[in-house]
Image (cartoon, rainbow, N blue to C red; front, side, top):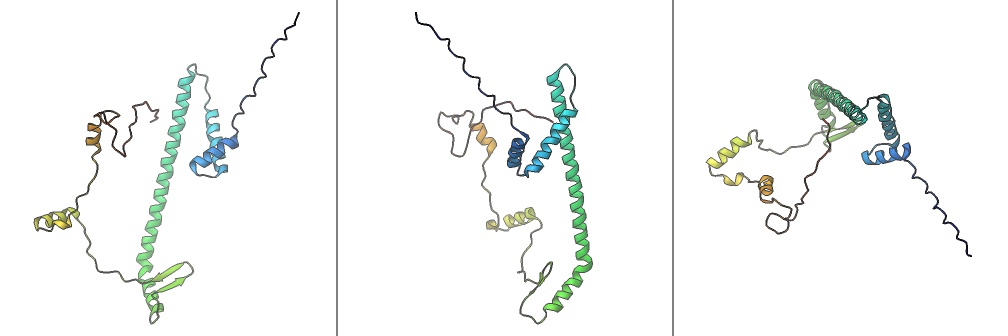
Length: 203
């Protein structure tokens, strides 16, 4: 009587290795265009922030969302603070540069004219830049487009006024009420249709 050999159970497949910090840092660095070590530091900082905000609330989903929103708001606030600091610093530099041109600009121009007098060139190369003179052509500067357009129309200079041709997106969307263009045909070239969908947001 033939004996039946029991079928061997398939060997368990190895579980997929979880991504390491280096893998995550490499992905973040490529996505954001930053150095890998900077990306790794950002990941460790966020992970640390999340670890510090662990809670024993019964509603784990709500607790997680509270932590998520709190951290997101904190990063938004930090970004705004840095933007404000950067703007203040740039304004300070601009003020200093304006002051420099006001105080030393005339002396610098006079010195440049003296050094370039009688020479064949109109510029002088220095260690930290080049000074010189260039001739700008005569020109008409417009300070008020609307006033000039009104005057041109009233005096028959219609060629002065250009009419810009642009797409009315509101009119187009009102006509294209379905993915096929509303008439059973295809959408116009250059137009794609996106189905309505819910999008997660934080504010």
